[in-house]
Image 1 (tube, rainbow, N blue to C red):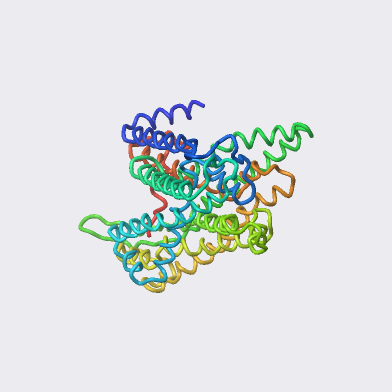
Image 2 (cartoon, rainbow, N blue to C red; image 1 turned 45 degrees about the vertical axis):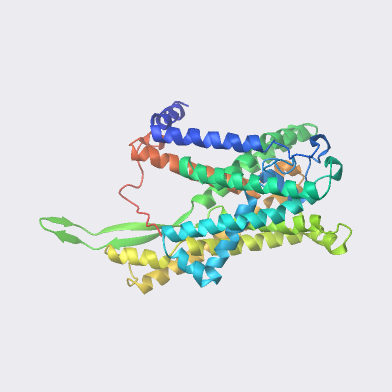
Amino acid sequence: MKKLIESIKNVFAIEDLRTRILNTLFFIAIYRLGSFVVLPGIDPTRLDKGQSGVLGILDTLLGGAFSHASIFALGIMPYISASIVLQLLTIAVPYFQKLQKEGESGRNKISQYTRILTIPIVAAQSVGFIATINAEAIMNPGVFFTVSTALIVTAGTLFCMWLGEKITDKGIGNGISMLIMIGIVSRLPGALIGEATARSMRGSLIFLIEMAVLFLVVMAVIILTQAVRQIPVQYAKQVGGAASLSSQRQYIPMKVNAAGVMPIIFAQSLMFVPAIAASAWNKDSEAATMIGTWFQPNHVVYNVVFGLLIVVFTYFYTAISVNPNQIADDLKRSGGFIPGVKPGRDTSEFIDEVLTRITLPGAVALAIIAILPAIATVAGVTGPFAQFYGGTSLIIMVGVVLDTMNQVKSYLLMRRYDSMMKTGKTRGRSQNIALAS
């Protein structure tokens, strides 16, 4: 406890870090407040509060904004869908490939295209959202209500997108992921209380077992997130004037899950499309009924497609985030080489082969964790609490928390605040080197 208090004091002793934390809390408060502002023309007392199936997962990611029919009903999800489309275009379209290679200016243009594409996507998804609202909750249905609601929901998503970018620029952590995590965390206390209440009628032992299993799952997610494969790098002996530097062996840490939480966010956003489309379609249609049944979270088809999408997006996002050619060039320029591997093309191929091999088990493990909520539901865990037994909710929470803690730690280390470290010393200063791709 003493170390924890000391770490908190160190965090708030840094003015820049303190300002960023306060900015993040301020933007999060605005986001949560907007999640409870009901759309005009809707009677909140007649809304269906308990969303089920894939819409229930969407409601969890949005912190209840979907079921409350708020102005942030679709949150940041359309922006993520637009990001997926732009990421795919960077592979298929030469123009976007060129932009990606232009550095900061190219990334800024891609970001601008993503914002523009978000507008038609959220406009289309808002129509599907209107179709999911209980007809009795709409006080004056009609064309005017549909158009005005679509405009408000679109504006709400654009505002959420702005909040996410502000958190990234002026706060701590990735703003988009942070908003999703806050929505998930807001549902955790209610789910935990509901599960404890349900289990208290049968005995507390089952609930304790569930909590122990949940702890193990969380540990497995942390291990998956932090696991690295170290590639040894040897630097040749350098002689300059009277100084002589002996050769040193360092390491390139290649993460088993280099893509982080993005594959599961991308895959989950695509899994919402069939359910929302089926809801907006003719509900008496046999095809709509079949699609709505197949793409429920507990259905085999849903989990198989979900798992495959996660594997595909893990490879895809790893390929665009880690560049073996650039790593090989950086090594060659700095006089480093991998023992037993020729510099240049052979080094690039070796790194690419290692990355491919470690990405497969990482992608499969990520997919297994993603479908754990369905397994937990079959085992008797209540629906809301089962969402935290793995899946999108847990992976996003763990990934965002670890990423945020690493950013805070970097601020502390830059100012020689080593008290946050377990040993009080900075590990790895003279051992490992991380080569940015």
